[in-house]
Length: 514
Image (cartoon, rainbow, N blue to C red; front, side, top):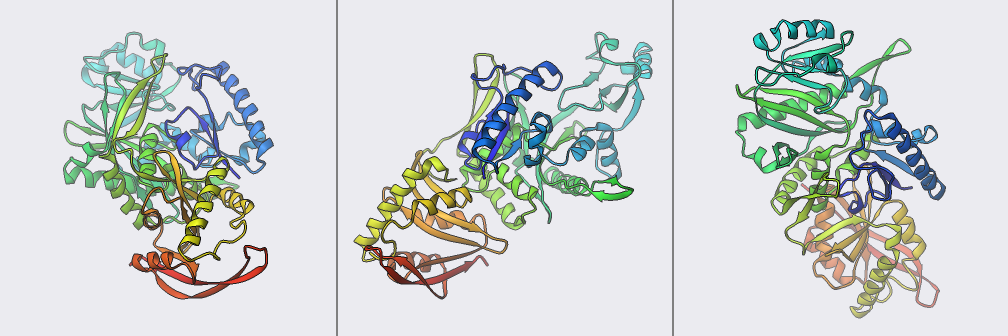
């Protein structure tokens, strides 16, 4: 079973081995240009729908159990009806429709005493009259918003310095709008969160900075330099709004039920010139912030954002204590990368994260097309065992290619990369209470692979089980030095080098972070 990303190009998708592949919506091979607007132009949406339908059918033909992870609800709606049940990580359409409505969102903030600008809901004809009478903006500077629309879509700012040239062209008489008090903004915040079954996880927050093209970039270090008072208030808002979102209910068959609102959400907030922190928007979909954070997590050798969201969506438990420790790890990695703004021939900016220190070990999920390199790693490891007095642990063709491919399909086999080359691999079976690690192997070109793999695993889980042969003195030494304790022995039967069955003994190890 593979998971396929569907949406606009994200710089890290091709390097995030959580995905088996992607259906990308602005590659040169597509019939679309980068600035096509799927929000408002139905003709182009129909073209995309046909394109996505074609690609989905091709994928399902090869992989009947494939799942599709769309970048947003808009993209999800372009996936053919017959494949809608295969969509993951875009929360219930009923829920997103609810939260996408600014009317509902404002009510949600009010019910939970979360800070926001004062507002009223006003009919377009009334707004136009007040503009004509100069009540807006001479007596009251305001922000006028459509019920639906993200970011700057459907937003009109009306101040003494900034007026609407033709109000009747953008405000419909019979439509209702949100009219909020205009605030002078000192800073804009991105407060991304992970809503889990058991708690609310907070990703590293950032402040938005505008570059030369008036495009926002995320500054994590800039947020960390803010006062403790501001950061604490942002933390409180993140958790409080996350709990409010998780508790949203709807009526179904005259019964009030909770909607399953799990996964990645981005909260947008502002700091006014009066030092108020006000919530402006929440986006229950993958955004530009996702791209930056996902790359940071990948460079830190922990779960990427998409995989974390997938686990939450599937109801798998997330260790929130470890999650907060990972936040610190990711913040350290932020200092080792630089943001490169690149432009294609249509002047559309794409931001890519580039490592300053290339010579670094990285872990990614193994893919079927890695099989030849993985088998090379195992052959090198078998030869090393023979050379160091352990000729009978892996004999014959073990580990079999079929077993290795099965581990790849189960998404348990991981590869270790150095400067883009596979130098090691290991199996990791994650369960509810612990993880089991299998077949750590390396080709010998880079030292310290085993310790690096164990560090990687303990960044994800707190309890690990492992086994190694009675004859594998080197691995026994590594486990003992790392703090593992022996818990017993086990016996398994494998074919020897001549194909005859041989029973081999193994020590069982366990370690749990205290």
